[in-house]
Structure formats: C-alpha cells, structure tokens
Image (tube, rainbow, N blue to C red; front, side):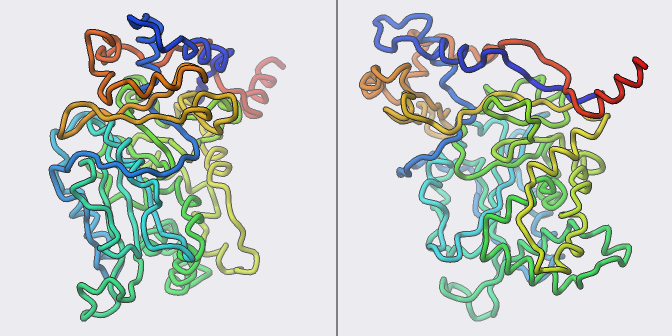
Length: 430
C-alpha cells in the first residue's frame, strides 16, 4: 500500500475562520465553545519564555538512575525500566523518547522552559509517557520528582568515574548515551566489517555529543532500535523535543492514527514536502521492520565508515534521509497531518497576548489545556477566565465530549505522488 498524505485545502483560512470568534460574548456562543475544543491544542511549536510551573505529584518514582559501567549494564537498566508499572495498561500507549545533554558551555541543568514542557505533558497522562534520557545534571539540579507528572520519566545515563564519588555533585562523570547510540552499528559489528574500532568509535561519538548536543537529533529515526529495552511495554514509540508544548494529546491522536497507520507525523501545513517532522512523529512499535527503517540511512547504519574520516564529518539531516527512506517503501501506511502551530508572527493573537496553559481541577492528574485569544483585540478577556474554565460543563459542554473530533477536516486525503509512482503510472499507460 502506498503512503498516504493528509492534505487540507485552504487550511490556514479555515483555521482562521474557526478561531476568529469574539471571545467576550456573554453568554458564550457556539463559536466560543468550538474554540474551546480547538484550543485544547495538541501540539504547539513556538519559541517561548520560560515560567515556573508545578504539575501534580507522581504516583511512582520518575527519576531512574543509571550508574553503569558497560553497555550490558545500560541494557539491564532498560530491562529494569520496562518492568516498572505504568498503571492500567491500555491497548495503545505511546513512548516519546527525548535524549538531552546540557550545552557544553552552559549550566548543567535542563532548559529553563522544562517546567512548561512537563506541565503540558501532564495533559496526555492517559496514553503517553515521555522518556527523557540525560547525563551530566547533578542530582541537586534535577527537577523535584514530586513536581513532575507521572508520565514524565527522567532516566539518568550518567556514571560516576570512581567509587568514592557517591553523593558528590561535582564528581567527574561519564555518559553511557554514546554506548546506546552505537547500537546502530550492531549488524556491521556482527559481520566484522567495522572500519573504526568500537572503542575508538565510542570515544569519538561521546566527545561529539558532549560538545555538540544538537547532534543528538541525527539519531531520532533509530530511537526505536537504540532504546528498544525501554519500549517493550508500548504499542508505539516516537520522538519530539523539550521546546514543544503539547497539552491534551489524547484528543488529537485519533483512533485511525493509533490503529491504521504505521507512522504518523504532525506538521504545520507543509505536508507536501513529505518530511517526517522531528518535532512530533510516532511509529507502531515493530522491532523487526518499522524500527529498522532507519538502516537505509547510511550515515547511521555505516557510522563506522563515516567516523573513519573525521575530517569529512558534517551534520546530517535525519528528517531528509529518514523521510526518503520511508517514502521509497511500498508496504507502509504513513499519515502527514496538519496539527501543529509554528513560527508565530506579528499580527497573531499568540504574538500579541501569548499562549495560556491551564490545569484542570483534578489534583492528581489534571488535564492541561493550551489556548489563546480569538483575536488580537480580545486578549484581556483571557485574564478573567478561571484556570479550569474548560471543565465548566454548563458553559463549555463541547470540551467534555471526548468522542468529538478536536479538529475540523478540510479537503480530502490524497495518495502521495513520488517519482516512483509517476514512473510506474507511465509504464502502465505505455
């Protein structure tokens, strides 16, 4: 089956028509109620200023330590993690994998906006876990686990270099992340084809990711394979970033996306480019096939060859290579959906008044909802709304209808046209 692409005709115009309802009507109109649904935004991509937020306490330990000394120990830690209880296991549950290293020339902490990310992640506690792998952050600078929602898991891959450093935040550490990433060379290692010895390769990659943490995005397509030991209890896995604000994702991921597609990616209107976006893409957890699609990207599967010539090393686009690898397959079903905001500009109500993130009444796992003003003239009205306004079913009934689609579809789904499909069509017609 050919991949399919989600197209929407006049998407921006339609979205604007739905949003631009006057928010200060009293009593609230049906338009405002529709706005309520739309603005429980699933994925919002934009640059934001940090502010402090404290989501509800977790029901289990979110901070998993990994003072390990070998790859086998790192694997064992993943196996221990997979045995942790995630509450009532549902048929579909997604693990979003996010590795993080602090900048080499910056403070050894998570980004200043991490609390905002965590607060927004609480909205999808019913169906998504966020596995955040990190190194080099002293325990005293880690977020208080009691302030994290239960679906945000901090997994520490640091190891102390000496036995007497226990409890010393300033003790030298090493990071086992590079050892995990070297799983991409497993086939060549088994075939004894490595052009760069594994020990040297580990040192080179470790040095590179420590000094240039952004390079971590190169590995996103292979996360399903690299972190396989952490993903055994999940039906799906995916990737995102800490500078993405999410919200109530359970209202955005449709049953169709859970069950009918092998890969789903959320973009912001450029779906015809067929990029699997690094900001939010998820896959069915199929270790033997889907989790191995990245192997067509030689910069990963033949990494030893790439690092055998360090003078020629350059940044590789995971989005470009992986997208090409996927669309050349004929047995995958892929959905490119327009469900994200990005690049907020002047004239937008977000630019003028900002984006609001509120928590509901539930003290354990409240629903987090993102919303903004309906237009640039209605921003003051947001300040008068209670933080849990969306749970007032007497005024905003539509939001409580969880089976109601959160996004209005415009246009039709269309098959992807690639050079391959055009070539095959010409053969059939000739």
